[in-house]
Image (cartoon, rainbow, N blue to C red):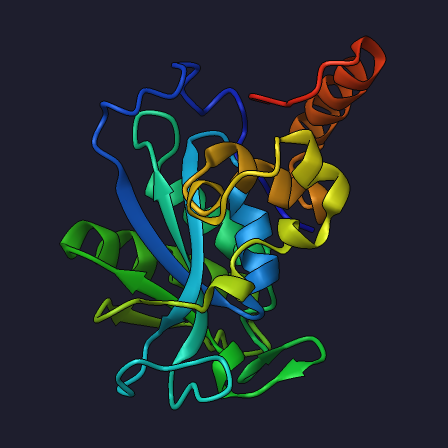
Length: 222
């Protein structure tokens, strides 16, 4: 079960894009599912799927080398904290499975927390220790790595939302460059995969139903 941040713990401040955004990168199996899990969180502005954790220069989906499928999360630290992203990370996959998640087996699906700075290292290590305490009979395989280079995946792998013509039409068939930088698209990506927190899933349902009832052509925000 995915454990989402308690809304009471999150700031109710509306997203302010003048606030410097922070970046977190995680590997936890298929990057399409990972992107959908994080994209729906309040405070997450953009998500990008890609490759990290390896030594191969300019990896590609069919030629990853030793990289892992990863998701880059740009977030507003006034609305959501790195430790809350860690909570979602741990509850969104099986950190005890070796080199894979569910039916997706292979080195590219391994579990990694990428860190940037001593505070993130401390938070990541503490969270892993807590997770290991819960798993007395098995070893948590998650690695904690200093982030090197994150390579964005090819355009066709960004946003599974693009496979949903209804939702794409609802947001006005955004051009590719707008879609990949849109916080609305990030939320709808999670909505389409039914991986949003229940409260947000219901809010988006209500918003879409309202638009369809009134005949408004384009969804601007959720």
